[in-house]
Image 1 (cartoon, rainbow, N blue to C red):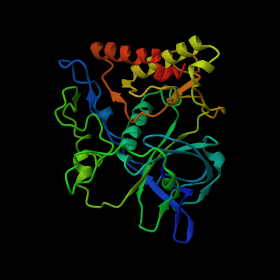
Image 2 (image 1 turned 120 degrees about the vertical axis):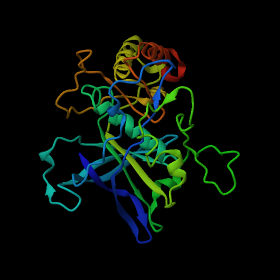
Image 3 (image 1 turned 180 degrees about the vertical axis):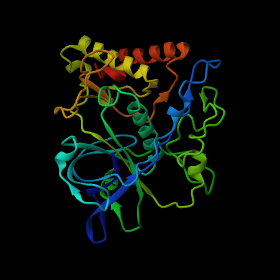
Length: 332
């Protein structure tokens, strides 16, 4: 949809507040995760690759309105659409020419975690490749965008980061520390396979490629989704806990069907659907109803082959068991 965006209200320069333009970037494919070491190669290997970033498509001007939260990976902001253009240098279009949400959610990666945001973007791409997942069990994602920061441009919110990365030990002298190591970064790890695909190894976000990059200027990376409503309340404030649990089980059934293990299921990664209804349909084709909850934060997720019965059984057990843990249910 968007090939570029301009953000207002997030950056400043020596001359005061300034806007910044980011372009759609390639996401970072995961390797296949399996518990069945003698299992089959997944069906539809071409589906594993990243989507090529669109070129000369729509350009959106977005105004940051509020900071919503901060997590390990980044800071989250609300934004609204200022204007829509045919392309970055094209004519302004009437907002009514395309159906868009009234509010967007901007996830800004902290400087140490841009690779993780590129990985999360890939999972949103996977969810959008088949009908009935994106906008049904997750928010609609409008893409991963990035740019390099020039020396005189600052992201103002980075000066107020509250959750700092943990200190890394045993970093070789002269080597750049990598804070967002991913589970499938290590070569030869027994439960991750590339199945002959090169999309993971050739990605600019691959650990070797990232360490070898020539340009060391800082990246700014964002993920844009529709803005959802409120997070799942902790256990003690849920009026009907069993009903919520049944609905979350249904959402996890859908996630299993597309071959994704969330990996970080907790109550603040579950959000209620947007208060406005802007999509043509949010009805789940597998359950025949609109789910009230959406899952977010896929940077620690795993992709498996749902047609492998051993993996499907194993992941279903893990995914469903999390609902009985305090981490998802909240403090008692």
